[in-house]
Length: 312
Image (cartoon, rainbow, N blue to C red; front, side, top):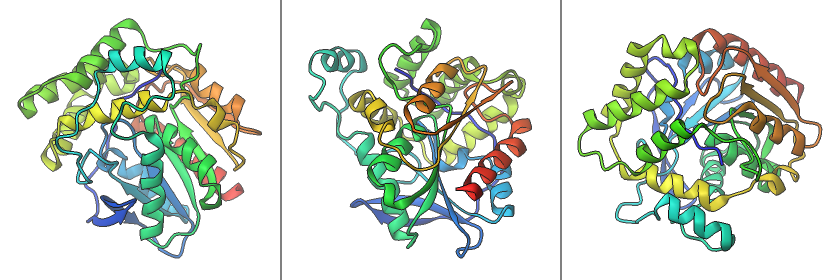
């Protein structure tokens, strides 16, 4: 099963707002002309909306799109499930193997998909192009399948169906990921060092060569919101949701799957699996991209996604 910790590069964000979505408060940013077709960007595991690179957001706006970003529940400035315990990930995975329908997590990715649709409701957006990174691509599969009337097109980036038999991360990456998810970090500095160590394992060569930018980005996110319990519940949501292949098979909207050739966390075969299970999906492999969005790839990625959205 693929999991994620997404490390991206960005500049300062525009002022944001709080909306009520699916019964909880969600932090949202709205970029561009409200009259333009909307793109909803869905971020990945533990990652706040500030991790979307502003060069990428602005490139989409310049192509004539309204771009909406938001903090998923339990991270950033969105609603926190304080005091709600998440199951231990190893125990949860073992239990789910024998009792697949047993719900162990406080919420699952279907709940997070309803959060995203609720953001569209709050902004009075009837239909949007959905772009999801990593866990956001998993959430996006549920949006595209279960809320198809709200979706113009779908683009998962470095994501997976989490289907059985797919290759997973290396033992080293899995070990550090689980340690990160269950870490009892007491200070932002402890969390920062743990996050930087993990990001260096999963980033592209370009990303690894920019450690100061990665540190600055993570510091910015910490100053905005430091909340260690959130990742544990998000991890539980991924595990509880399980295999998304049946979901992908129900997606009928135009779909472009983008994946990095050098992704050590969610191998490119996982992205190919999405494309194989979504009817008429197109797969785009990006050389030199790991489990990150390297700055040099942003113009190409924005062009690919913009063209896909316009064609849809």
